[in-house]
Image (cartoon, rainbow, N blue to C red; front, side):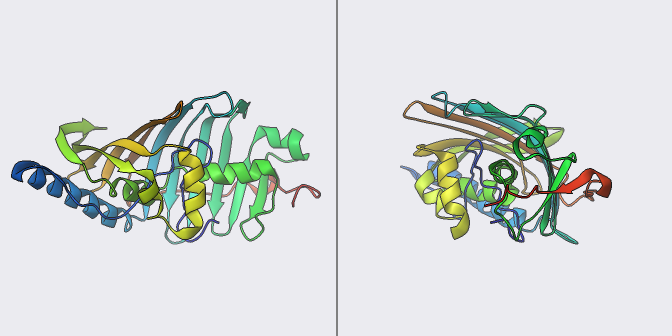
Length: 275
């Protein structure tokens, strides 16, 4: 269910990303100090991201495995939490499990209403307008709309940052520039079973599906001097399935413009397509 904060935990590609506290570990004094420092940075980053009211994210997620499990999702999203929750998501590429969406997906969420633009909806549900309006209080729309809502859940800054904080082997590996911003690069792994439990209860099952059979995920995160993540890369492999995801974050707390599509381009979900 989408609530006040969008739970962006994934369905389409398995980029569900996870949560909260970190403890350092090491075999002697030097590694322990390094790991604790890295842990504290990530814990503070998780705290700071919870206070962010707007941002932009660009992401690409690749999953390789069997034909039914392989695919790619690529796109960008604008997010704001004030004065009301709003999201503008554009997925240029949606190709999962041999099911591609020609023309991609566009979704705009404002408050309790989501507007979805998917070319395939015209054929699947007989839509007569470019956009379809769906109330979040009525989540029984077509499978295609449900999948679109799931795909919206990929890009959540707060949940992404939370995930990496369950690592017990994170360490600083240097400084680099990300999109013109100096950032410290941290690397480590996190156990997915522990990480998923840090998410809100109603998001955990979806996150487990997204992470598939991955037991441990390697991550690299680049944190700016303001304590906010600028880039996150995830990689995991288990039983022939590989997850590779990269997300770039920017525009923290900057004004964003998210508008509903023109009324004359919006239709309701055709009757007979809800369950």
